Image 1: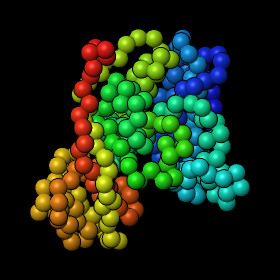
Image 2: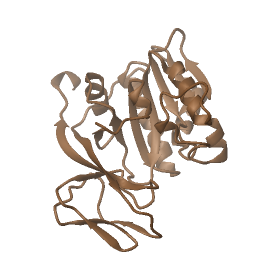
Image 3: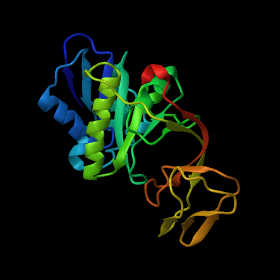
Image 4: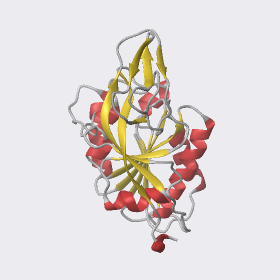
Length: 265
């Protein structure tokens, strides 16, 4: 784990990249900040987490780090120990954590709950949606540390790396680390309601778009040609044929659209 800092004093803001070793977009954003070292108005901690997985270009070494929190200093797995170290490093910090996905090209945010912080900050980020994980946060970083997580774009793409840089700077501006103003926008909010599981198969297909409502009776996915049909309406989130080993993605409900307040204009 590599830890650096911009500005003097004790940081209350942190930026995290490289939780997964096959998602380098955030690492590039952090590296650029460290190379440029822009003047800051309050200190910020910058963390590149799973260096061992990044070096091997794999998601994890022993287990998924973003399912291993709070971790244990005596854990048998690399990620179990690393999770504990990261929690200690981020104590007292509002954290911005960058990821990428195989399911959706447009950036979106994921939060543990619709806190005052999330509803204030996320509309100031260039994201298409905010997703509340509801009952699906176990083992994730934001189950232990106040965190805004962003999916920056398609895994391994140049666009995701560019988005990570843009998102990081927007977040740091919104929390007063970087000078300047942000632009708030209308932001749809979704809440995860269920896991969409998939059986072991040779081929997988997904027939729907993320964040586009699926109506009852609509086919939404298939495993070896065995089609799954919606029994009730839902919004797909993180749906892709091969993004996860045992699930296609998640079902969600649309719960709100956040609009900019006059004070934010």
